[in-house]
Length: 279
Image (cartoon, rainbow, N blue to C red; front, top):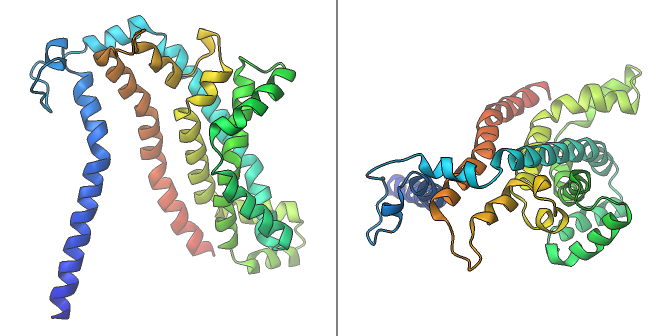
């Protein structure tokens, strides 16, 4: 009876997981289907999953109408810079917060979590005024600064957990060998934190790559705009979307995140296994 119950529970879990995956995959699959449909099928009263007459015209039209490559380059520069800077700042900060547990560090950790609940609208005016005084409005440098500030709390919170999983005995052994705090962090702790650093950088990159609101407010020149902002240009003056080119451009915009995650996923798993062996 117990075996049957456990099997039924396991089957139910797998079915729930498949349903959840189907729920997550539906928008992307429909986006891909729409990107390859000709205008006649897009206006059909009976839409289908697989286009009857697949076409690349939507992609050609999307590149002809909007500077997608220039916008993608702006997004890549902003997202990659923000991810690298956020990880570089969060790693030593996470080490200090994890190894020196005081009331101040506990309060800082709580503030990090609470700050993620702040809506964008609440902080956009102060950020705009600060960047204007620094002459960084309509600048990728100013946008990168905003992305770093916005992603740093969660990056710090993630890395604190990874640092706490590293045994203190490794640091004590390094201290006995005469290693300084900085040398211990660079040579002993950082290699074991590689999975966490990669996962945190991936999070920061995807967050910055998909961000829309800050880029919309802070970037005014068309040549400086990021890809999510340029996608809104496929909407007409009355809110009518040019559906085919919009779907094609949106599909291309999602590919970098998928490719980066696919390339790094194995390294994250392998790094976790290596870290467990070293520990």
